Image 1 (cartoon, rainbow, N blue to C red):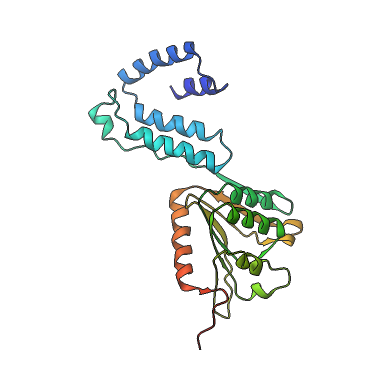
Image 2 (image 1 turned 180 degrees about the vertical axis):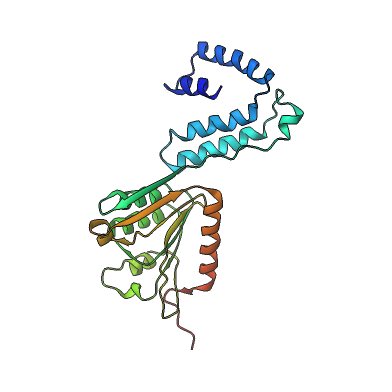
Length: 240
């Protein structure tokens, strides 16, 4: 049944004839014991494959969650109590040197709608700094965690970001806050070895992963919030 829907989806246009044929086949599918609820999840996963941004995918996820709330008179009692098929969440991987990683970060920042939580060793690439400032100016709520020593490096843009009004905190140890991850809207996480610097794009062999997998995003968000409470407000007087 899924393959029939996949064929109908090829041109992203469900014609009346296709709809009639699918409706007829669905009746047979249900009578033979096929799970309509499982098929529903599979169709949403199929649609996910056509989207390239997590903003679009977030809309689709909302639609699926809303759809699940609607009563379905064709679902049997046994089926309604069955375990739902997990949603398929996409992930993307990028590598440097080259522009793939920096452009992926730019898109990630540009597509954030409400919040951006940035936890990185340093920010020393004006392309990424500009993207963060643009997000801040359009009303996205940013929080920045970074390393206290790297803030002083020549080329660091952290002080510029802080001066623009972005809440910033740093570690307060002799060691490094060496993370390189970011969260957008609490729904997607970007992580990997990639430093937010010009040299990482131009010369370094680095990797970057973006995923919406809720279990993974949730752990990163929990760690970010823990570090946010633990670290020092940038520019605040040091306690004796």
